[in-house]
Image 1 (tube, rainbow, N blue to C red):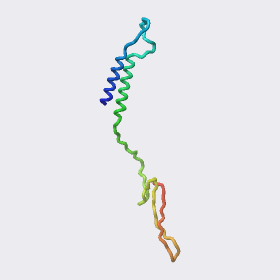
Image 2: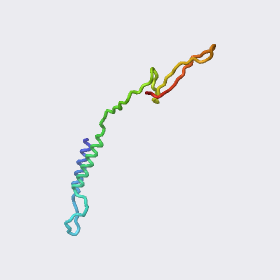
Image 3: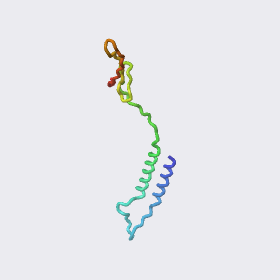
Image 4: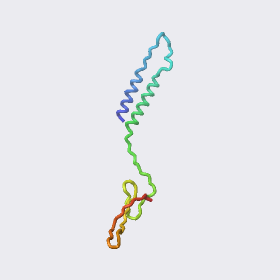
Length: 111
């Protein structure tokens, strides 16, 4: 903030010191559409305020995730990183004399 104020003061002093205007041929009118000291000073002040705002934009904000409906899986199934529920079940496969207990994994969309 101090740097911004110093630059604002220096810019304003430069703007106010540039007031000498040459007028050719004794003409007392200023150039049409020329810059005036007031316009220069206003521009310097506006630039200083803008510089102060930009340099002080280091604030912090608490970002809160929007609260949506609860996403859940059935029973003890887990929600994986891709957003799908992963479940498993054990199935007995085989014939009458040779049976095997097989784990089957499945995925589904959470509700």
